[in-house]
Length: 227
Image (cartoon, rainbow, N blue to C red):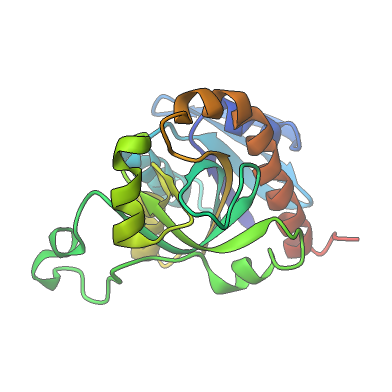
């Protein structure tokens, strides 16, 4: 089995690559793809960059060029619910765009069967259960903006999400087109409020590690190497 692991930034990438066995870097279209093994699984790990276009291009490259059979997205997000705290991990059971209506994405039903919202693969989601009491399962919303206090209340009112990020829905849509299993793992670095920029900088490193620790446990279960 070959898996693809994506993240958006170098601070999210580093703790994944550090766990790989003998990674070899391949340069493709301005990105570095780290090819190696994780818990006995063939793995391709890549920093795709911030935003939906970067995420979609990278996901498609993992599928078309590297032939991955599952994609895992790990990284941080901004919390949008009183149920969650910084450092908690969100598994995307429901994933959708907050900055473009579904009616425009699928105008005239040009892609029959496309859902109004996407989701992580149920079997991969089940592998997250029982790992930690700080894991939550719910809605992640995605848009091309770093959300702070000015937009926060409107997004909560419209979507009732657990968190917000800038890539997950794009990756989920690509995976839907290719019928490829996806698991989105996000650890909260901030609360997407007026202090988001400062709080993000203070927590992005530790929250990135927290998401990767959950990913690591999932891969152990997937490969049958979990103790």
